Length: 509
Ligand code: ADP
Image (tube, rainbow, N blue to C red; front, side):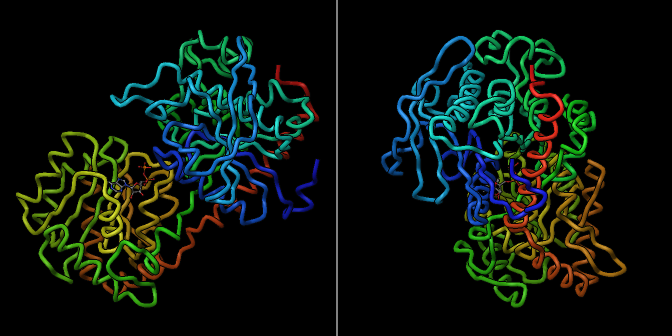
């Protein structure tokens, strides 16, 4: 085993196992994290490789994917599965392995069909993926120092590693890490699938995979991973408390300092006011003149009164309960009637909220603009052209928009939860320091008064606002920063494994 403490520059072999990766298959932030993190680790000199399924939407021919293993046999609990593995290297330089299994992955969606019905065989599909990734290491003789699993879909990889491969010449020394991107989804399935999953009934216990007489994939990963990370330090704390843990808080709390929070970075090649291809004028912390042009274009695009002096607040996001947009809906009319502001809203999701926000421009013509749908161009324009960006989330594991907006000098107004609390510095009226405005109570009153605070700062203390914009734009949200924290977490996983192996091996049964 390499002595990583003595040599923190040690280059690692890292296998990332995921159900999503941008640009090949994306539903949420997981896809972006896997793409950006792996690319950054590669640039730092680590040998990082990614394993994802070969879904229908991934076209092998256009990606020039090469067959690397055929056939590959993966022993599940009660049968052997056969698959083929392809490799893409062209786009990212990071080798991406595609697990091709016709029955499991050649279908319309990643997790559900077109009517949003979850596929019944998801526990089979993703336990297979979790185990196939390890088999691949053996077949291609890739000896990882760390296997990095993500969310419930691949949470059983650390369990397979410990239960089946602890003594393996290729995998026996590999440590494991599980990253929780969203704890609301845990992969809970009937216990009849234990046979197929193949981890043995002794693992169907309350401290391992069992939860209310069902299998909980994420819980299994929390038990077996050498280190667990959550996508922000505050989210990592929140999930150890009963409300934030969605039933898993005692198990997470019991992992002590092996549970770490690491904030995501942002992709500066896509989100940067100096080289954003989608905005009408570029700008920087040194020269903000382009931001005015963006504001003007934003007002035109959303049919708002053209006015350089009025404060404009932007909102972007999925209309789901987590995002707290119902708090905005309760108070938006008072806001617009009592404050000199304009509001732009971009989003889609809950039908009631879509109707409500979609109709507001008719009633508050020139003051509220909205677009119901997913629109990347408008998202960039709002981020660049607004003065403030509102995120009233009830919970937010990491959140990206508050980081994008700070980088564009658009000050966030946020509820202090998860990554929002970690990445926004609250305004200090005495010094003028800060990068945004925070509230704690998940109520429409708290939202209303905090927006009022931001707006009064805009009109009454413009020198503070200028200072805040500079501080926000000069912050480091780079993936290099996040990747350095991931490296430390990998090293901790390796140390944890070494210590446990020394004490108990084989303790897994
Ligand atoms: P989450 O992953 O929970 O949806 P994040 O803040 O982490 O929230 O990331 C959301 C991403 O999706 C951001 O890049 C945001 O700009 C984008 N987004 C969300 N809704 C829309 C929309 N309606 N149109 C365009 N982009 C959107």
